[in-house]
Length: 252
Ligand SMILES: Nc1ncnc2c1ncn2[C@@H]1O[C@H](COP(=O)(O)OP(=O)(O)O)[C@@H](O)[C@H]1O
Ligand SMILES: [Mg+2]
Image 1: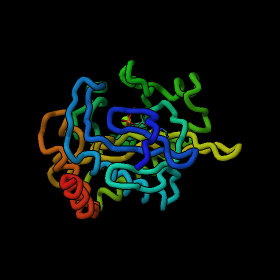
Image 2: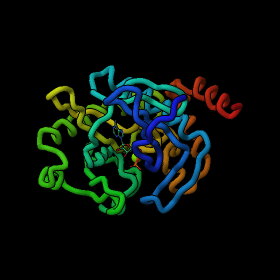
Image 3: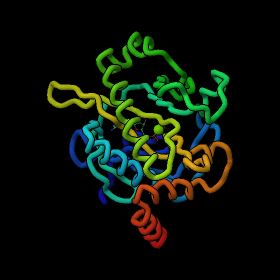
């Protein structure tokens, strides 16, 4: 394949210029990081799994009318997406207490929240992605009030859909992180879902056993990280092909 221009290398993905203007290619690496980059590892096969899981989720969200950046998967590790201007806010939606909210508010992990809660963090690695209020998002013009309204209603729709989708395969959607971007189409701007939705960006627990099937296995050294991601893919019905692809890759 012709050499492509690298636009950005992040912690989990590399962005390349796409074949047409306004498109990018997301390449999913096996790199895992946690605690604001202080913990790092390579988890063989993670990128292949996240590429497939994120594709599956984005395609299904698209079918129910959620606008996303996803165009199509190119191969095991790459997907073609529309280039967006990322809104520098990480949107977190929580159904059950886990992670930072437990320390912050003194709640036990696993405590169901009274209702789904949407939180915002300023996307800034140097500051450790600090929690901010809606006020900060609009006051600093990270997003307009219209964009923030769209972001919240899209996030709640995504939560409803994904909670049901995962529940159907015996998985509880505890929480997840989203990124949104601005898609410029002529003189129109639309807010669309960007980045990825995968076990790197969601907390997913087995409904029966509460076994963690997500990146907390890496954060907490629980082991079998990619095996858990593969289990998520398998339950969603996308495992067989992914396993075959992963095997083909190791044959190369
Ligand atoms: N459609 C898109 N257009 C432009 N940038 C995007 C798009 N989707 C995701 N991104 C950005 O690409 C990067 C993906 O790489 P990642 O390894 O997740 O980076 P990071 O270390 O910043 O989290 C993120 O910074 C994300 O905001
Ligand atoms: Mg990221």
